[in-house]
Length: 593
Image (cartoon, rainbow, N blue to C red):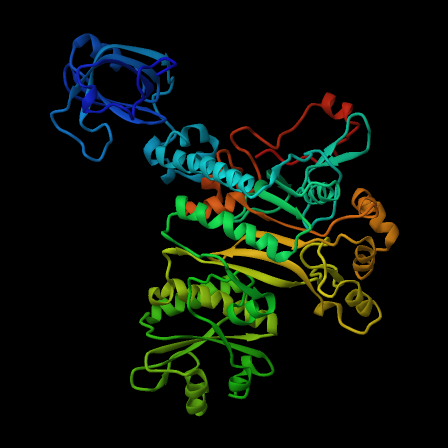
């Protein structure tokens, strides 16, 4: 072994008994059991080894060392009297001849116990992340991340893709989220932007004659945090293929991802190719979301015609959706909590009733359903012991509420959710356009560079008012794994004429397109190949593999929910000299906390 040791702390076994060795690592714990007798646990990256102190001289040395100091231990390996079968090194121990401090911990008290750091407050964990990462359980996720990235890279190279890095400092581009802007010192008043994704660059690579591109790409978006989304910075397996269509891209990912999940995943079962293809509108109708968790066997039923006339005011004139659960055994308290949780998440109140073992409609809105009991039982195929969850409102609201209800019911009813698997599906045929929540006007729904189904002819019909732009679908697709959007992609619009026509519908003319996307527009005018791509999210994939609920657990140095690095103090103030060099004046300063 090189460096300062002969072996690691996870390496020694019975065959090493009698050997003189040197170990280095962190002094994890000291347990004194007599005047000159103590057990010391030494930990390094690879594991732990027990050191048994039995002399006055060694005891004096150990007593002067704080826990988490780095030390070296030289001594002889011997068999343990009391073995620990839970440890790889549990059959042996070290009798030390020399203990030396390499890096002293100068604090008697730590912010948290290293091996129980996950129980500490998140803000403390993030502030002392370098201590948090000493916890083998926390470190394990980061090790797995490295292994997964290496496996993804090898698989993509095996598929004939070439790894190419694209710029970090680039131009601001309207891609759906806020940019992080970087001021230019040499060009006062002008700014670079950190890339939200390498979208334009990878398409330009296709026009440059490269056939298959990929990279593990850093992406930067000024977005709010969620449990499954890290604020500020994230990584994706970015890929693009020339002379390719939608099925080509889907096929590559169907070959690349399942082996990674089979090798590194928490669950033993993984969907095999081809994954289910579900049209966007069908996903909303059956599952109430474009991110369906297919581990749940429940589907949403339309009950508008069935229940709109039952003299229950919230259903009057509204779309009504139903989720039927057989063999339902939850208590009333659990049902009340379920409804409260759904209302918080969906913003709409759900309703319910039960068809009990006696064949009676009971609970919830039973008195309103009772007059039409026979037709409800027949139409919904109810059997004794069924629970019926309901939502009502405008179509999108009713679908969303029913989707949340379906997910919560799956978690509540183990017989309807097979958790121990990775269930993949593709959501395809996304709408090309939508009405913006803030603008109230037509906007791109998913990706402005996508090819519309029907091409130029469809766009011209929409421009002429012959069809509704909201009915136009695009060759866009998302990969969903266990209810999480895990990749997004599209067949690209490689024809300048089609690109201009697509942007006209959102009130941007040819001059606007040329101004906003000059390189791509001009490149396409020199003859671009049909091309398509996708970008699986690396952080989210690793979160799924580990079974973690928070994405921060699989990132070495994550930010907090407010996009702050509390360990490094970022974002932070800069000096007046730095601002002057950049020709920037700060007009508002955040109050110090």
